[in-house]
Image 1 (cartoon, rainbow, N blue to C red):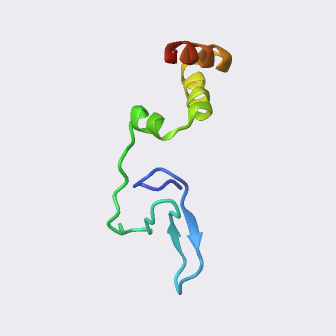
Image 2 (tube, helix red, strand yellow):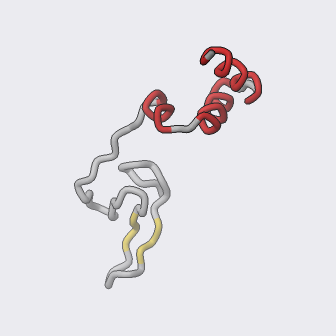
Length: 79
C-alpha cells in the first residue's frame, strides 16, 4: 500500500494498542495527516543539493548518456 501524502510504502506499526499502517518517510498515519506537508522538489532544486559526481550520475540517468560524456562536457564548460 502506498502513502497518499508522499507515495512511499506504508508499513504496519505494531507499537500501539491497535496496529495501524504508517509511513515512516513523512509521518502519515492511516486515516489522518500529522500536518506536515511534503513539498515536491523540482529537478533544478534537487541538482543544487548534489555534489559534482552525484550530479553527473543524475544527469546521465535522465539523459541516457554515458557519465564520461557529461563529466567532460561540464569540465569544459567550467573552464
